[in-house]
Length: 153
Length: 320
Image (tube, rainbow over all chains, first blue to last red; front, side, top):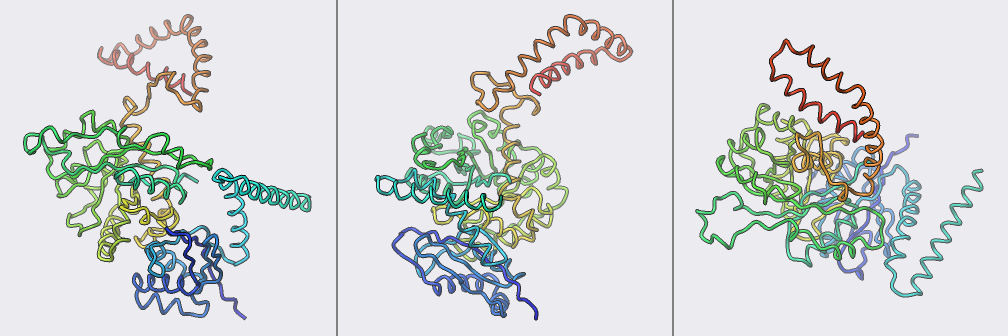
């Protein structure tokens, strides 16, 4: 058995109005069309090889998207990502956060990414209730890390 | 890892500019330059119709106020630095003298966009600028040769490519890729920076995405990353050398204006100075005499130049 090697690209959708959310298919077609515009038939057809281009995970609240493609072809994908300017007719673009070899490593990175953003969220809070919520979240992730350290020791 | 930078954000009205700066901060840029684009900057005043109306804006007017900056960086510890930059079109060789004038030199960065082969050669060889802009909205007609570009590589002048016109339109994208590949062939991936030049906030892209664009221009991954980070740092140090340093190795600054991070230099130099004064009294006078007597066979001019050279050395001692 030969393992198909993949690359996972973790992206964040940035757009103007926050109410709008995107499906997996919306993002897939936006990416596919851009690959077709930049790399032509060769790009699209090579993306259809067995570990084919697909959207593995979307998070509607934070706008996180996980794209999968074959290893080696990720350069085609990554080079066409910056040219996306509209998703489903709405001006939006994708910002690459992380590129990894497994879904697990990407999700691991995602957790640390969200944790690092908590402190900046705390300063943006306006009402007391929001502040309390973020504080609880920060405390919780601090406890998690201390537990991790304890078990390692 | 060096800080990601975007050295071209066009100047526009306040709200739009704030939006752009917000977006660039959100995307993770740490240094940003606001570009004041004036195509008629170098044309002498007599040829213009309105004499008084046209004046170069000072960098203070272009940069946003402190309150705006604070509201942008609110809630994050990441450093965010905003620089000023001026850029013009260079059509004739004789116009270049205005670049030396004080009102232009006040800006942190100076960029020039040559339109003909002669001005391109001039910009590469002699002009005291930081960035040479290469137009990505039309075909690059000039003949490039290694001889024209190599002086620019040696002097540390960088070539700039803007990516946001190519996001707007697919024909511009063709020009960008064609011009960039032509440039990369001759300068072998060195001395190139990628900047945005965006008109809207939505035309900005994250630093990693911009680096990935480099893959389209026949760059390898390290070179592509350098176009957003390391090379931009080199541009900044070059501009600092043009602006602040006398003879580009020594910088004279008032102690009051020093930033807190550099205050250790003062403490150390005080201690060193005490030592040196002590040494000077005892040894230095006799040393100088010995030094002179050995060199007396040469011309007397040598003696003068030695005296001048000894000064910088002393300053170097103080700062190290």
